[in-house]
Amino acid sequence: MRRVALLLGGLLLLGVAGLFLVAPPLLDARLNRVDPPPEAPPSPAARRLHQTLRVADLHADPLLWRRDLLRRNARGQVDVPRLLEGRVALQVFAAVTKSPWGQNYERTRGDSDRITPLVLLQRWPPATWTRLGARALHQASKLHAAAARSEGRLVVVRDAAELAGFLAERASQPERVAGLLAVEGLHALDGELEAVDALFQAGFRMMAPTHFFDNALGGSSAGLAKGGLTPFGRRVIRRLEALGVIVDLAHASPAVIDDVLDLATRPVVVSHTGVQATCRGPRNLSDAHVRRIAAQGGLIGIGFWAGAVCDRAPEAIVRAIVHVRELVGVRHVALGSDFDGTVHTAFDASGLVRLTDALLAAGLGQDEVRAVMGENVLRSLAELLPAGERS
Image (cartoon, rainbow, N blue to C red; front, top):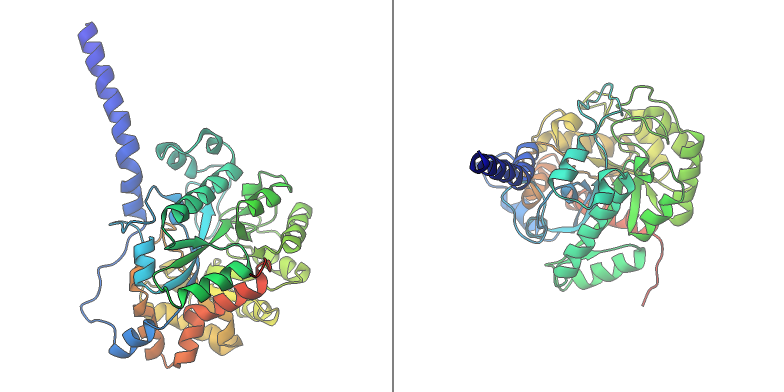
């Protein structure tokens, strides 16, 4: 009997060990899918132009997953080798800290969390099991650790001086990519205003008040009440501006967008979104909000997944980009892929030349393509990040 019990105990331990080893990569592969490449390659003109670009993307979530960012992975959409192949000069890496079960764009409750099982399965530190802020800090530490191991291929930038220095060095050493840290939803503050400063000290320079559910700061575009900023939310926005943190209105309710724009003294971004004019839905921006954001100098990142642009094809992404360009000018539109954010895309970071090709096919000039593919982001960051110390 004792032998049988030991055998069953051993099998149970093996099963648990297998769950911890196998489940996270299986989930990653299932939730972050990429279509096979098309038979027809991008045009020679697109390939030539793309090799000269400094691509920048306002939103991706690879820090949530158990992957080595410095190695080319067979799953997901982002890692340093694929970023370099795609000519990405700067990638915004977002920290996801909570995501409810059954989340949807219409009405999502905030009283459950499917990130907690992933945290446990991926063996994150015990502090992250219950504290959302600890989850954000852990993801920041993953990016900093990857940069430290990268021998200069990955650099984390925190201010305008560091960004300028990186871009100057990259001009002669193109096999390098910069990372900027962002927070997707300030429920990561755990209700404490002082936590803004802790996140800032960890390197976070872009923060979104909400994600998929209403929280202590205000309403989500997918929440139940979809209200405006709370008094706490207003205090947080003022503190973000005082520190020079960029406010990201992705996932914000229309009321929160209006309240932030009324309160803000600096331009904002919407890191990853679509527009109602080309893809209707509560997740996407109205023309009125596009105009208000642009009028205040803001930047709108267009997403690559069907929920943002109603298709995965590059042409659908470009339709949204062209609409923003025609409505408010090309200076106010950028890329906001949402790579690795549990989305299915037509290409990964290595295939961004397909977007260059589609932009050229839509009639954009080379300077406009440069602006959309990265220069708008780099200009905005140079203006909005804390100044830093220039050498």
